Image 1: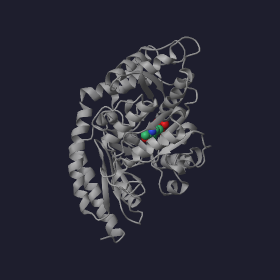
Image 2: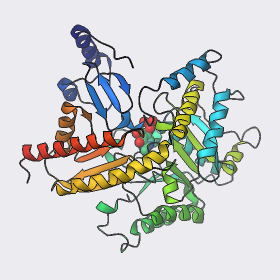
Image 3: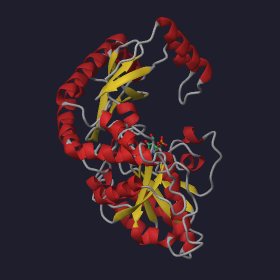
Image 4: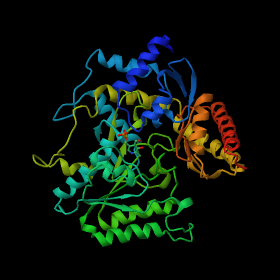
Length: 449
Ligand SMILES: Cc1ncc(COP(=O)(O)O)c(C=O)c1O
């Protein structure tokens, strides 16, 4: 690994350019005034910033770098490909070998009869494409009125107008134009049940609510239900009862609705399964992925669907899927994904995530002794610790961890721990040390007993 060095003058200029030449997302100028974080190198779960500080990354660079930073072999595979052909788009009748090989690999690891891939560039695009595919599917099979999409409160699905419209956080939708036909079902977070009920005595009130919504809207107007079987870092990884997710599948079958699972965040081993839906024993009609498909070495997204759905778009001129993106399934991104998945298999990372998840479960129990820890939720390498306090304790702990050398993601008073799949047990012990000390320091600072 090479750790580049910069002079004080160069750093000052780079920081100035961040202020003046970049419009970031979700960052206020007030935060940037405090500190501009510039990263220059990485290895495994560790990053180096421009000042040469070594920092433990517990959010795997936005839940992407499953195989960790610094895997030169991924770059070497891309370089090898570049010696012959760097890129040809999947648009009409042209393909490159890495695109075909990756589609074959995804068919092998995807659950059930999911075996046909449509490549895109990102998670948002994967969800957008799946929604468009579901609508065109019905349009072409004689049910053009099936256009509505049901999503869930508390689930995030992306950045485009379409995926923002099905994102179940009202504040994220405020500045997007509303898209007609996007409906919301209850969030399923048993620890904070919307109905104030407890599982199993609730008798899955949320599932009944979903069925009522389908019935009241008219089942033959609904194209798809989109959900993250395990909602992500914005929602605190609430594990729904298995019978809820299985019940959603049954409702889709009963009413002829297509089921889209957003596995952008949960896909590729993070739950200890290749895909979260395997934990629930449910196969959706569309499985949308991105992030860890390349471990962040290249941008790539994919919608994996069933042959019987894909075949509807292969019935001669006029039936083809009417959308496509220039760079979707970029040849070099497919090479990166193939090498990434080779590392997954060689190092048994899915199994490691499952074992590490059991260790995390055990060690997180230690945190329950703190009065501010409300509840902890997650599986594999995806975890959230919900704190109860009327003070901004989550942000304080995040800042404390950063100052002491660890990246910790927080959503208000929810702390998120979602490390790379390569995190070792020793590295996780270090995470625990940070959490203990950070929580204790915060309680002292806010005078919480
Ligand atoms: C569950 C989920 N869906 C969709 C997206 C959007 O993916 P992208 O940022 O690659 O467009 C994300 C991104 O964080 C996500 O976590």
